[in-house]
Image (cartoon, rainbow over all chains, first blue to last red; front, side, top):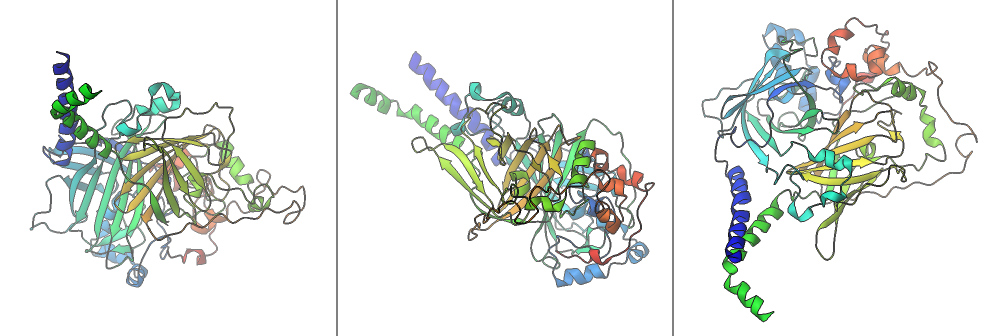
Length: 274
Length: 294
């Protein structure tokens, strides 16, 4: 009898976690059903980094920290905001490679089971993150391009210990109160987004260009800080064979807010930071 | 013993799932962070008086304004290394990460991170945090745990240090949380600094590195000097309140209201852009500073 119980237990050990992992890696189910992190809700930018490049419009030729090639520098030197207004291209600094660093608020929600939608109040832009693979051949270029999304990472084995590898288990009794407090966390995986079909725009408000050949790779990582605040970090990797000598990598930080309060939709503007 | 072995062999079919399960388990969260990593400094470059985006409270602003650059030449400071949350973010911040394994169990005991200005050991073996009265060090005491593919590091027991190289203070009561992710050949760290002494809200920063297998991290070359060799003996450079004549230079050069440049939680949110439109700015005298390129 004992032997049978042990075998059932062993079989359950095998089936339960393995099935969980397979469902993530095989991509079965919709983007919503296989979500490894909860990104929906309202978020506000917290501009802790590059404040003077984001909270004010930087001066022309302020290209600090950008890996521009000569062609990129020349294009940036030629920046003329009046021309952009005349051409109806005020949204050039609100494209997907730049929008997450524009100070403002985000509303993230499921448009359908395979489309995660991000609305921004700054520039009143909409990003659609598709969980159904490559862009259809007829997709036209746009400020937000075409974004393919997938989850990376795995669900934790249990809430306590949040995803610690079994081989590195810690005896709960040996943890300090600080470490135990942080075990109640929510980050389980990241959202990877790859964007193509972009319309040429600006990486920075002062006319630093990215071309239509640019691609954008992003990782959305939600986590709970020790003080209980929920944060979203977006790692942004822009690759542009025309204007950059190497990928340009930055991060944008957002804090979760309970509701729509403070939502302030603005049009695209060439002379304002948002 | 011979009987037990025979029984196991006879019932080997149910041992297999356990082995497979353990194999699957070890693959979880086993992101390889070790190796050589070259920094990509696309974030802040800070000058004196540039506290923008840092949620300093009044005590933090006062302390930052009292900082005088020659303080680094004091004998007790000249070979002082940076705490990790600063040393990993300012150049040269090439990283070398290796892991220490238990020789018997092959479990990870610790990760060791080396950079020119900082060293950190991240304990992964679940050892308890020391008493709050234990020795505080430049790198503090760090423990790590996995959340999915993210290594989450908690650091306490830090000696008083700086958030920037331009004198923004961080107290010994601070806790620093790091989230370390590897995305292909990129390594990203997000730093969350909580400091009840000098900050109104957590300060979040980030840094990214690119895998660079051929890189060699230089040793920290520093020679201590005797008191009086650089600065007059007994002199501690600093500014008294309201007496720092360099504090507004950054704001003037970039056309930022001086009060905004002093930081504070309010300044980090989008609505502050509107508020700045009503704030006093100083007359800009030069634009040569803006001819910068990465």
